[in-house]
Amino acid sequence: MLRASGLHKAYRSPSGARLEVVRGVDLEVAPGELVAITGASGSGKSTLLNLLGLLEPADRGDVWLGGDRVTALSRRGQSRARGRSIGFVFQSFLLIPSLTALDNVLLAARYVGGVTAPVRRRAGELLADVGLADRARHYPPELSGGEQQRVAVCRAILNDPPVLLADEPTGNLDDANASVILSRMAARARAGGAVLVVTHREDVAAHASRVLVLDGGRLYPGRGTRNHR
Image 1 (tube, rainbow, N blue to C red):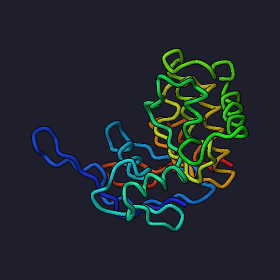
Image 2: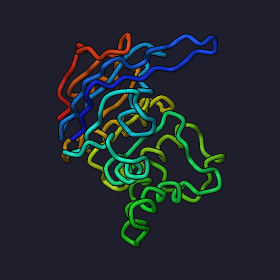
Image 3: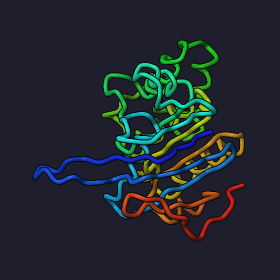
Image 4: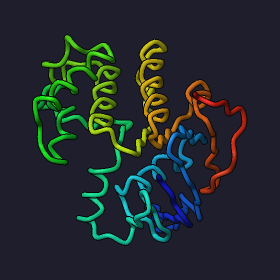
């Protein structure tokens, strides 16, 4: 479902030094898997997720979605592939302040064909599922950080994408709401989706079927994995 081969990414520091953040990462997330990537703060977890989600280009290496080598596409082609196949939960939410919670969720549908009555109904149901039925008409500045994160999760799964990428999806949630979000992600995996979660929290990683650790720009097998099914 999602595969990466030989991904490399480096940046230049203000002093001009070359900082290698991702160094030859190989990764495969199969349909039905919920995989967690852990690692120290600043280890490059978010950068790796951005590479896999086609949000920034790798210096070297390739990403496949299904059987398609999407790194060979133009940026426009990658944008279309991302809209069709990837749901992304951003650590910083990236909600549009001038849109209501419901309309922020519906943005996902606008990129892939438009908003129909069934899609609007599904968006409302998703918000209700995460306890935000009474906040659907509120704007992001009127929502708490945890509420905004739950809106972002609903937006990411609205189109039933085959691949779901989540960057610290429970970072702004209390335990009860974190459990709701994690159960939704586990359900996506059980339905055949490929789910990849970046987290620093051991309790979140414990929900994964496989745990990997990013250290020194490379991925290593983690410990303490249990099956989420």
